Length: 330
Image (cartoon, rainbow, N blue to C red; front, side, top):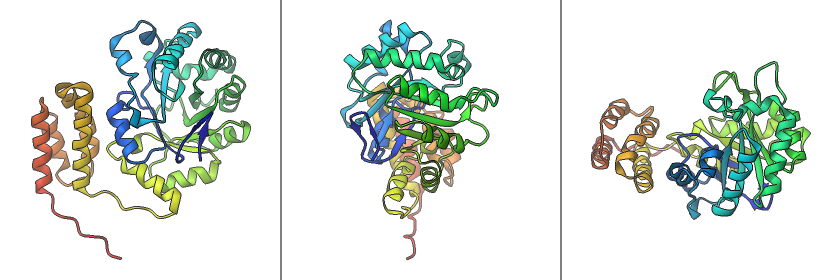
């Protein structure tokens, strides 16, 4: 099984840290569906050290989520270390992850996120400083490079290892690619062959079969699933089971999707209150309803809901229109 420092996971399936998505409500869903490790959405170092209440709220970890990796980002060694110390002493996260993969301009302009990919020496310096300052294991999530002319994934991963990092997750796309094109699994394999710490593969894992293929082709220690789990936590469960047994569990029924969408909303309401949860649930509901007959109309109705009562009623009404699905033939 995957082990990061002293932290042992029950399987090799990891929920990726997705900004604006991976709050406690979503992470609890992922845990319910079997993820061995869940990663929180990235948190700005300056927000932590200035004790911004909205930022500190993002550091909340429910005991049921553990083991959990809490991700921070920043461009200054001083502020990153201060933030890491706060997370180390004031949260029950199991792992501190440093973001070296975020491609959005507002992050890279601050000399943070994937901007680090251009400088292996800075990676060593920053990771070493954080490792020296905290007791929790430190990991890094990175991309394969900045662009096709600056692919330093192997050197960068080696810098993480030298600095005392306990694992590295590699997304097989460059910063310039954002989330387009094809993920390069060969570079992930090269990273795995170049370091002794655990390597986690990320990118284009859309099905349980993809996850198995990534493990086989790259030799990675774990598989990180991001967009494939949006509105589809069954992807996590089905991957865990497929890797354990080689048997592919069935896809969820429409009613199961509606039921879990409702559970997700209830958890989000407890976390953020009904009004904010109703707003945030619009994107999640769109993901849950994707591909369902009548789902597009439900999505439009949910986008007009401003209260939890309205949203729950839309889901209840839709569920009642669904026909029982035939049992699979043997």
